[in-house]
Length: 215
Image 1 (tube, rainbow, N blue to C red):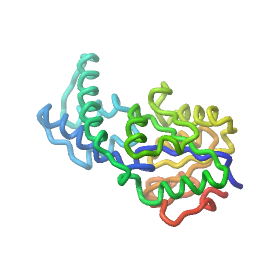
Image 2: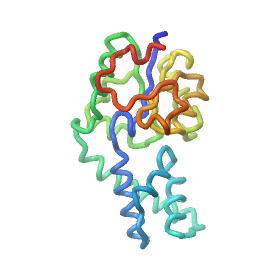
Image 3: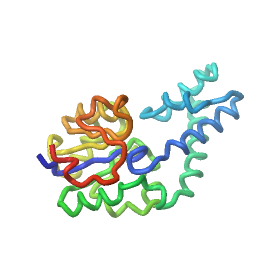
Image 4: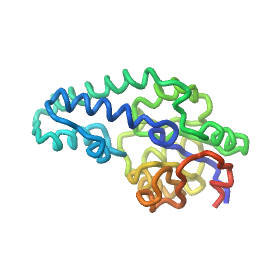
């Protein structure tokens, strides 16, 4: 069965901004006096910014009770991240993504972004994809992070499509859980073993047509 809409997570699905998040968290850790490795960074995937900060602090064995100081550290990390993504170009769209999006549009399937990132619009403008999406739901429009389904349900509502007629593309376990909770089909993008709860898993969009979403 063909869906009426497809909803895409941004980070790790449309573009790979994980490297910029990592560089910013690593920079913050260094300033706080400890090393933050790529293995440590795996724990931050699909997690909100403040939760990520808590994990980072636990890695460094640092306890901070002052909420205001935590927010300042989180903001500092985000400012560095924005500095990095502000240099992004269209070349950073992941392979096959733009072609696949255009195939969906040509087939009359609505497309949306469903991301917890508050920097979604900055990234989409840098990679010149804003006008391709029928709806963009980001961190400025939601109050609950994945695995809560709010981001996907809001996208379906804005598209005026029943959740059961939507298919989500996600690269994180929390996102797959959110899509399932929303009553949507979900295609994992990445590792088959990690994303095994998705209805389907692909490693790349290269070579895929709309038959990918017909199930």
